Image 1 (tube, rainbow, N blue to C red):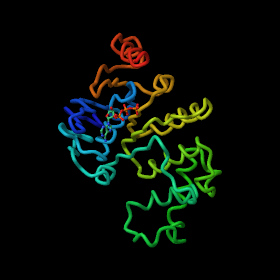
Image 2: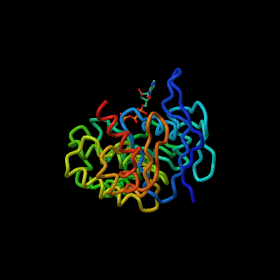
Image 3: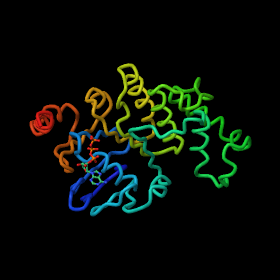
Length: 248
Ligand SMILES: Nc1ncnc2c1ncn2[C@@H]1O[C@H](COP(=O)(O)OP(=O)(O)OP(=O)(O)O)[C@@H](O)[C@H]1O
């Protein structure tokens, strides 16, 4: 079963082609990595998959259903959540309040009920469960602004999980982390894969090797190669793309 498929997905920015006829097939339950040198089009591709950008051409399918051109909230409602490279948090809200906000989003509460005792009470047990999943159970009452970097990223992940996604898109989940946080994040992503499909953009090849069973390499917006990590690290085209970029 294919969780996510793109056909000829293309994005032009005023004549500059950032994503070029990408055909991607992500198997359900897989962890699938998107890698490639800086500027290869990975983030743009994520933005196309989540509806943040509209494609110039091509189509996107989720579980066989076409979602091309749908708005981000409509795609989210179909079970797609994404985490961002940079955590987008409110400094003064606690970790718990963040997750409660994320949990109540699909409900019909009017906005003025945000954070009322009633809302907090209803969503608190589930929110604590999600915080425990990402290892933040002891930080629930801490304002997000005071969390160390690794825990901010974990909270960002908790917000994506609150949407109960079938497909989780992770944009550089270990970017800027020290070794310890990287190892913790790899373990966490291992846990999160239960019942989900995960697509991740990742520059750390150690992380890709540990997590991804399938790797798509992008260069100049196009798919350069695809296969297992072991295949990709030996592929002369891939080696050249990375070395070329490094020398450039
Ligand atoms: N809104 C935009 N307008 C014009 N050009 C853009 C826009 N967004 C991205 N680009 C260009 O498209 C190309 C691909 O960018 P993108 O951010 O998708 O690459 P990336 O693979 O995610 O890079 P990185 O690994 O550095 O995050 C880059 O050359 C970038 O400058």
